Image 1 (cartoon, one colour):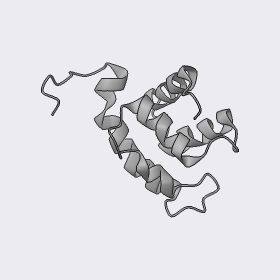
Image 2 (spheres, one colour; image 1 turned 120 degrees about the vertical axis):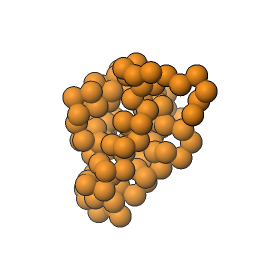
Image 3 (cartoon, one colour; image 1 turned 30 degrees about the vertical axis):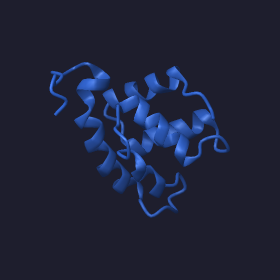
Image 4 (tube, one colour; image 1 turned 180 degrees about the vertical axis):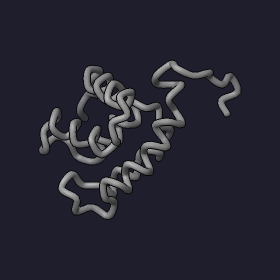
Amino acid sequence: MLEIRDDLIENLRAMARRNERPSVLLRELVARLGPDTADRPLLVRYFSAAFHFSEGQGYKIFGWFPDGTGALKDADIDNLLSRRIEQTRAEWDGTGPKSSSGL
């Protein structure tokens, strides 16, 4: 199993701070890892690590392919993941209040 690279996690977060679309983040990750390495389970692991997704929140990535042939197109994955990224922003960006109750 490949190690998750901290530099790529930070790159994803920096791009999200600039309001880049999740499909753009995914393509950048594929480009940086290489298409042979960047399978969808690894992409899910990176998004989960970068954006503090809980189990299953990144699984929508399995329906997306960089070449547009997946069940989810760019607009679909952008819509689904943008919400999740924003929901966890306080955890990964440190910009909002953190809930002590975990709710």
